[in-house]
Length: 189
Image 1: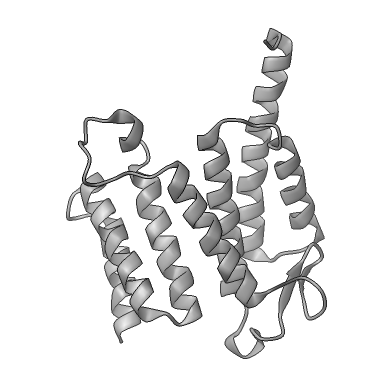
Image 2 (image 1 turned 45 degrees about the horizontal axis):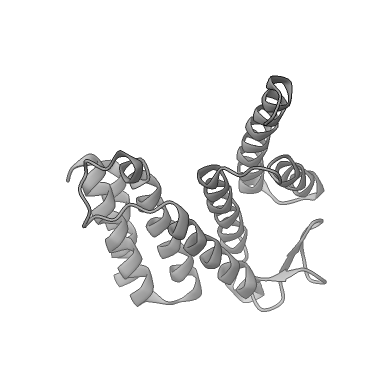
């Protein structure tokens, strides 16, 4: 068993790792550079010994969001030649645009395996109900990645699942359902 001091240090590291992941997402919205890459590496290091499957699933979700956001920033005409590396977006070595999308979808699928709300189950199961918002967000983000890759049918299916999760969580009239319906309209137009 861990001593109270060791336990406190681990808990502090996990909290710092989560905060760094949030900073990476915020910074990547502006641009991906060496500093963002360094923050991402630090966050992953701080969380490397974490055994909490929910924390790890959320980190996988955030990494998937990071990759999908990076992929969405690449102009269509540059997608075949653009790569992402620790130094930022480049034309040289790194993860290709297609691989960014594929990796994002893989991470989202892994999160589904750990933290998923099954709408066919009872709402009384508090363990699963706490995953309801994440399940909606997973479907929405998955739909965005499919939309990026040009897979309209898969995007629409994911968006419909997201709308259903958001309806269960928040009722029919909420901004999440409205956002999903808006995206579905864009895909269909």
